[in-house]
Length: 112
Image 1: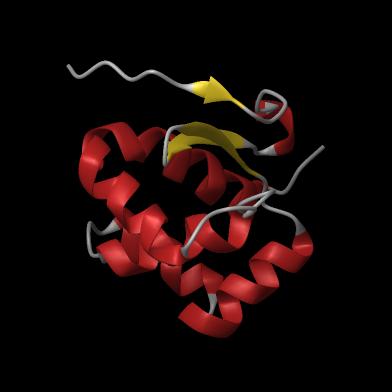
Image 2: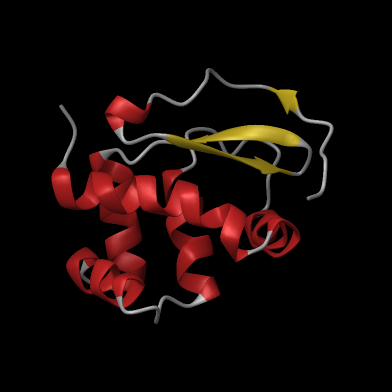
């Protein structure tokens, strides 16, 4: 298991709101599935229900995961979209599954 020197730059994720965090370019970044973020993801990726189905069937592509994370970033300041893909590659799919599950659950169940 790799270790990271992470500078926390955002508030911690609130799982009750469907939020998650992932380290990108040396900083812990908040993924917040707001309505606007999900609409942006849907415009790029197609219907979110189909995205959730692909993920459930193990057919979610890396680019789709990166796009969903990109659209859900609460703050993109100083990041390029490629940084998200690099973070996924660096952490691996197993580590990225937790924030992905949180976002997919928020899509399906909504937020309190």
